Length: 120
View (cartoon, rainbow, N blue to C red):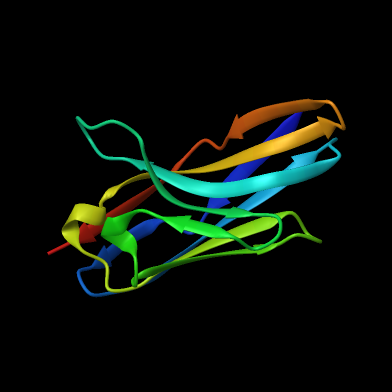
């Protein structure tokens, strides 16, 4: 089993910054992809940013140039630096990880979510 624990959410004014952290723990071979998704009230969960173990990234168009994802592979940590926050960034942010439990068994895990609220 793998656990993902997010931290760093909160209330910030528009134009401000936050950094989210995600810590993965448990028994696994390696974490292939770590990333962040978000879900605003009444909307579907959407991809924000993901990063492969080799450093490749993918961002939602709405956050390009404002958000930066990073990882510490040795410590099984992922971060999301969010700058120039807008009211439309308000959502619950979820950490996601695609994990190889063994060389032949891969699973997807989610954190419990952390609330980010941007006031205008």
